[in-house]
Length: 156
Length: 106
Image (tube, rainbow over all chains, first blue to last red; front, top):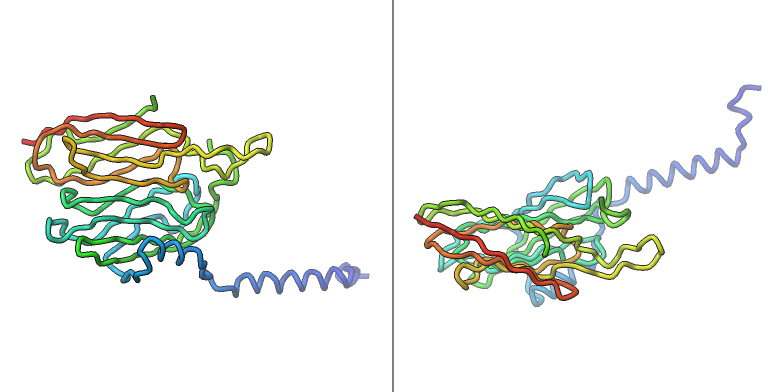
């Protein structure tokens, strides 16, 4: 009897079901909206909507190790007394807490560029909100894929 | 006292925009990890950082558990005058540390 015919039909079914599951996982939208992220941003901005633009997040799109991910936030601003960035807040979508860090800047900065290193628990979206001296809010977002997550094993 | 690494240019021209980097040795224990005994390790993070030039605030940061261990911050300053830069970190369990660096502007 050829080998193929000896495979238990139940196993066949299970395999087929497994295949369907994989297909479902692939078909799922890359990023589902996480309401807590929107809520955290709304709490920070006082419910005001931030306009997309002027804020760019520089981070590796594919992160090997989520324990220390270099992150730079750059805001397009002349940084003069009349027009400068007052604050930058960074939020994440899927860490245990939505906040990452909040920065306070002054017109003496000259350049609205801030760098740090962050933890990423899993693949997710990062959002940065910049508050300008005229009170306007701007936002930038980026999606990152994390292969080795932070928070699962002890950090070496 | 935690080990601190500060990078401030030795000399800056007036009006030049300089980058200042500050790193401090700290575990930034998130409060979400469990130890070998299965118990949650209590949160122990640095919550705030500030850099002042002769008392005037230059840059400040509020940190959360998502900031990696040994927090590193880099920011900019338009060099207009010489002075003393003061760096302060504050955190859980009464952590407080202050370091200074000289900023020389020609």
